[in-house]
Image (cartoon, rainbow, N blue to C red; front, top):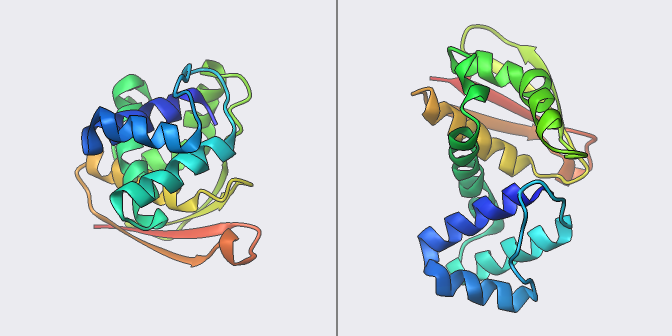
Length: 178
């Protein structure tokens, strides 16, 4: 996972639990907490941080990762506003993630190990996103979609009938835009 993700996670934890909370989490995981945005770090290190955050906040992982996904979108968009500038609406933006957004990410970072998306257009306000990634961060993807919806001034509901965590080879995110 790229250091920028760790940097943004740190920002969220400090906003929520303060610098002492972040330092306590680092101590419990044995991490030095030094992350360079373009460098790659172990997924296991990220998962260990999230696990300790869940304990510190007394929240389930699904909730923490979903909240982080929303925050991650906001912070990535603040760092790279051109990613959303070309899409005039949420659905157009979501369709651009795999080709346009991930294409730009590949220009910024070496070996970012991005998830793959396939799309099924189901009408004006309906979209199915098929998510594939060995990281199985589908809940983070849901949070990112909710973050994008907020950016575009929309609400979404996301149904997740197929999931990697249940043995499938992909996750199916059925997005309804309101």
